[in-house]
Image (cartoon, rainbow over all chains, first blue to last red):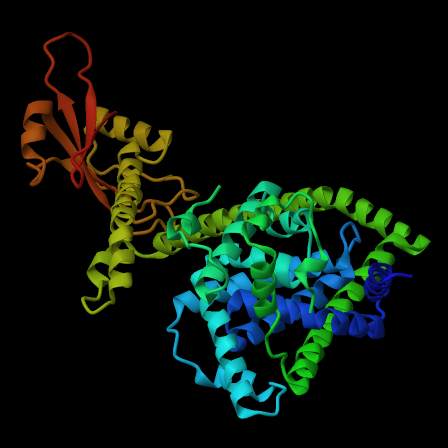
Length: 197
Length: 282
């Protein structure tokens, strides 16, 4: 039984009231759900809030899961919406400088040398800054493709947009990220980012 | 973490806008984030499981309720009973409304009868009141009593009229002279110019009500004598004819007047009651 079938079986067992199956499934989904939220929110604190909301929504929806889509596609859709909602809430409230968030990242860095740790923290801060410059829709498309590894059709399902729109968002998001991070020789075109096909 | 380079998509031509190395670097930066600490992860999953338990409990309650509604002959029986009760409900309402309407009608009739009895009592009380009720009114009575007295004032007037009629009735009886025998005696006395005739035989069975001298036997006193000019009805007597006799019948003074007629034959006689000045042919 492959991973997809196993997760489907767990979801069906949880739908029938199997609490252990629900616990097992939530544990399997947790890392990627947090990854989606972490990169879309571009902030570890907001990501944790979004992750909590996403997991609760998944758990509440499990008894009604009908299996028409893959468990992960269904779960990532919930996680993406939770992260985008968290972004909207953050726009409505002041955005204090949270140094503890990146300090929290720093505590989980594996490395022996202080210089390597500093570089890692700087890199993580840079990617958050670069992601923050992306429109949330572009961010979600890039994260679902490059972080989670979903194909375009699944992303189109999760974001509820045509595949062509998914492709465009991914390409432009990547290019802007690379430009923000100073990767390669691509020239950033700010006007392109704001356009919606 | 997943590496995007492991998921080539033949349709993703836009991905070639970044060269292979640049794309690899971007994806490498994306996947490089610190996972949450284990305690926070456990807390998140526990909270989600609690929500799962709540949702499951709610779903179980709904399922049990659905089963209870769907299963069992008793439930079907109960539904039939419920339908029957609903069918009977309009009839019950109709009966209730009819009963309420009947009660209202009875109450209205009772109130109406009560008012009528009150009127009767007032009438009886008023009738029992003497004609001199007005004189006995107390100025210190309350407003209600004053209103009641005012309402009764009209009735008192009627009572007074009735009382007057009752008083006048004996006077008429006097002028009727009691009986045919009295009239014949008067006529004979007039014919004979007999001033000593005593009239008797007045009907004792119908004594005058308010006669000052109740008939306690035969009219004892009826002295016919030449009529002097009566004091109270002189104008009437002068126009009527010539007074011939005076008499006392049942205590009332009467005058027998002979009409001054130029025609031949006996002149008609009239009896004039000197109390009421009423005229009665003799």
